[in-house]
Image 1 (cartoon, rainbow, N blue to C red):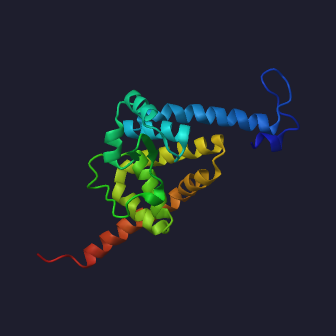
Image 2 (cartoon, helix red, strand yellow; image 1 turned 120 degrees about the vertical axis):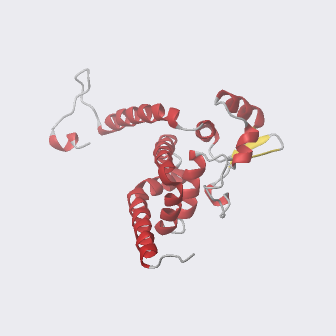
Image 3 (cartoon, one colour; image 1 turned 180 degrees about the horizontal axis):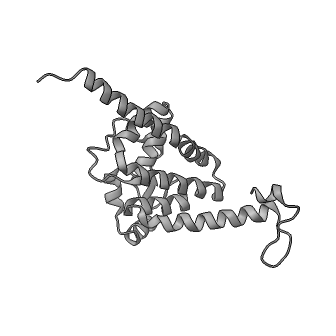
Amino acid sequence: MAIYTRYAQVLDAAGKRMTVGEALALINQTLDEALTEQEGDFDADSRFALAWFEQTGFAEGDFGVADVLARAKNTSVAGMVEAGIVASGRGKVRLWKPAELPKNWDPATDTRLTAWEMVHHLIRVLDEGETAAADLLKALGGKADIARELAYRLYALCERKKRAPEALSYNALVQSWPEITRLAREGAVARGAQADLFPQEY
């Protein structure tokens, strides 16, 4: 967008004057294409959740539609219920909202850990503050990078679909990521220094 401040006019490929709105649409389209390519990095459950979220958000949808989509993404509704991503009953399926997720969730004991869970648990604990989110980020370790990619993807999707409340949550996580990462790193260093000062006796 800096181009618009440097030049009197910006032209499209046909030589016609391009408006800021047209440029933003083109930027968003290119960003969406790039982010869509990243979906292959996500686990099958998260790919299902992303596609389901795009269709229904956190609202209920028909089990039959969810079942077909789950099979196409190489997963199952029952497996995602077990993973803690969706609720299913009475012929309906819906994604759990961050506020509905269990507060005692531990990624170390999760036998079906997904990027979708990581993002939404991070959003849940971010409401408690960046320090709480940093503690969870540290527990996720190297797996957290894929969660950051998914958070960006979800933010872009919400912006495109004009889902402002969800966009705010994903944007808050994306914007807080550098600080959360710094706090997680500093917390690990501080705990290491404290352990050196006060070693455990066996």
